[in-house]
Image (cartoon, rainbow, N blue to C red):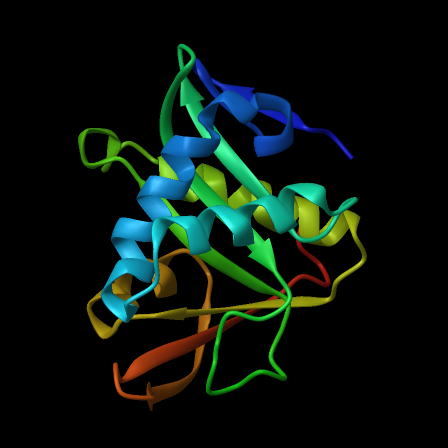
Length: 164
């Protein structure tokens, strides 16, 4: 399993290898998802430390451009509170606003899929807000359920058997 992949100056690596970006990743996760649920930044940092202490799974990847943080994604067992049996999950896909529209999210997704495949998983799930349906569908994710929970989330599945 490779910790680093790069293309056109973009480097994607495990957060364990670039832990100087830990505070930035924690901040982005907290502001994007956790803060709205009343969680503290310390809660996010504790959860992220647990991910970093794991051997191979769960994991957090970061995208760097010339050493600067531009995105992150995490692979965890479950991220869909209403469907805890669905996993593993691609979670917390974040790209800095100024880096959006340049394929960073797609490269992060590819890196997560490659890691899940290397770990022997046959499928992966994710939950997303309805306005992201077109984005994930265009990237090969199949919608399996909609209107889940209070946020009316969409649940997607991706078959890894046969991915390359």
